Length: 416
Image (tube, one colour):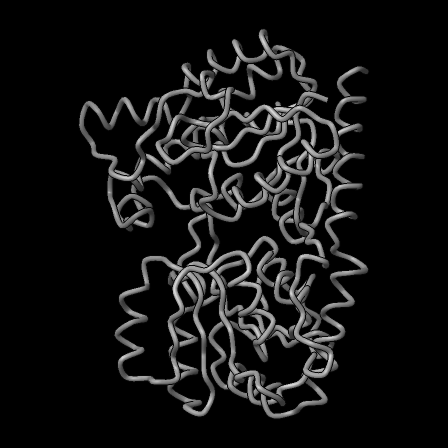
């Protein structure tokens, strides 16, 4: 098949792009032709299809002036994106389109083009933006719930990028798209990484008949497990540490990590990632010698950090759609202590492959961490169960088989 993969960026920027690029590689390796469609951007990967990319939409510094209003117009409904995609369809003749995050940079105008050309269309739901002006939804007690906030109140709160203009643009765009019902009307199937987000979409008015649950997957063989004599054990030459991997931002619970480091000075905390809380983390590290900021790591370096960790922490303060980094930890045979939010309980089973804790329950975090850190037998059992779960329920092969079936379903539905 010839498959369009549409996303605002075409380089490794975040979780959605990580998934998209991995999917692109697999599709290509199985004989499909992958046609990327993104906005033009300096860091994009080179591709012969970039001639079809619409120009960049700058959403980082939106202002309420003439240029800002032009940007708002493109965020709401990009005629350029629609024209460029129409040309691509005529010249490349795709069989299917797989949509990812297109909201404000490409805009959902491209869905009208796909519908007009009768291109079967599926969309992976990577975040909450179909039902909320924010991409993340705060867990109870952790932040405001802006899913139904009005334009004036939402703008005044500066919920988006701490900017009146950016918040106004985000609200107007989201509410207009919801009013048009443009996603629900024009996407044939929505692929939901968790039952949690499926239920959220149903509550948000999306037709249940278009929703399919398709958890993310991971290749268990990609994990670097520690040698058998140390596997699941804290003895030997491996340093004992608790590991966090992810974006260094407020919603990921970085404050919880800092508090735990202060309470448990005998436990080393290794922090992997980058983001807006980096400076705060460094300042905390000056006072907590057991807080080790590793920086951004990937590939073999990241695998080694996973392999040698005692436990992995996921203290998110927002309702995560799924938590792919949790699967990465489990593939390495590591137990996970995670927040009881969003789709995470569909992966982390309390007392089976890790522990679930309320985001703000610092006592619960401390107790769970100490239980794993100072009980070899428990750590080994949870780690084995974590690895088994990945192999039996969340392997990449299973994900790809189900995805292929949903592609076929979307194509068959278009022919009716």
